[in-house]
Image (cartoon, rainbow, N blue to C red; front, side, top):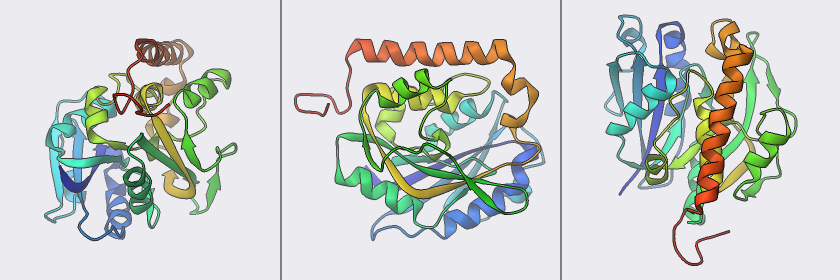
Length: 256
């Protein structure tokens, strides 16, 4: 498998203008010798709004498809991912310096880890940042710990799914992101947690932009009935995976 990190970004018209900032943060990443990144930008739909913001360079690929939400866009982009690892980067977010190298180092050092996350900082409209309370201790996250915390704390995980860095084979085995109108990244996080150990880096790895047009800020995102349904199906999948006893990596002595 290639020594490549595939960065996957779903984008739609309103968030397209933030792509240059995301690209700048990606271009400034420094990786160990022999490693490289590719950036797959997948528009959720077909419009003329996104392409003008897509960087013109060989490591960047832009595609369009019928609309289905960010989870569908990211998952269809996986058809073109050939790296050993996949990093999610939302169009309106930015990586911090060294984020990819820290994620890579964690998983390269321990083959029993299937995924990594890091601290995230809200990037506010005035340019200031704000942290999240309750980050876990840095280091390994044992299988099932995220689901337990999420279920006991009002559907709030102790790590941010927008910071996920995942082994590509494991991501594919789980079917990519959930086919949900929102919380598709939380559903993936819970599924990963159900079958494998993870890692948390205390150093901030992501600036999570807060802005008026973001999808998670819309009224439909917090509709009680839909939110309850999203949470229920995400938890049900994780519990089912947990009950089947499948583990990553598979086999004797493959971790906890």
